[in-house]
Image 1 (cartoon, rainbow, N blue to C red):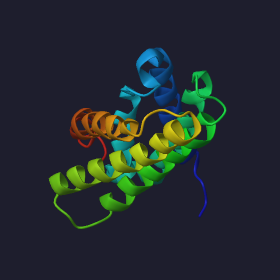
Image 2 (tube, rainbow, N blue to C red):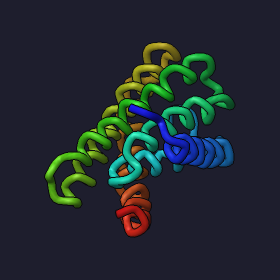
Image 3 (cartoon, rainbow, N blue to C red):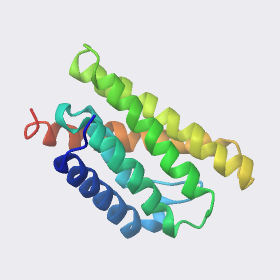
Image 4 (tube, rainbow, N blue to C red):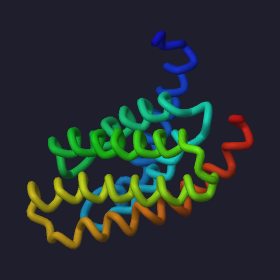
Length: 161
């Protein structure tokens, strides 16, 4: 596979926007009760022409967005990993023949679960936060990816057919 300049530019734009939103809203982007609004972008691989470049951009954005995290250095590992796994799940669900709304629902739940398990493990096992942290993260991610991300998806899919 040859990587095109469009792929690189799209990936870097996605990474930059994800990073900027995460850093601007840093006080709610980290911790036990996090509400990372930038994760609404995790839905981007569901859009047909934004597949793998969105996965790459979101993974890079996950690393850069965690540079200011109070949970360093582990957030530099688990954050990008969570974005990589969640966005890859959404990319794979997007390639199925399911109804658009079913794809959105299934990918939102699976991606939220992946982020909750990965980031929740980091916060509970490494930093000693309560196990309920995984549930808090799952609920917040489901709202962000499913509701806010769903709005992002519906707004952008018009431009990428």
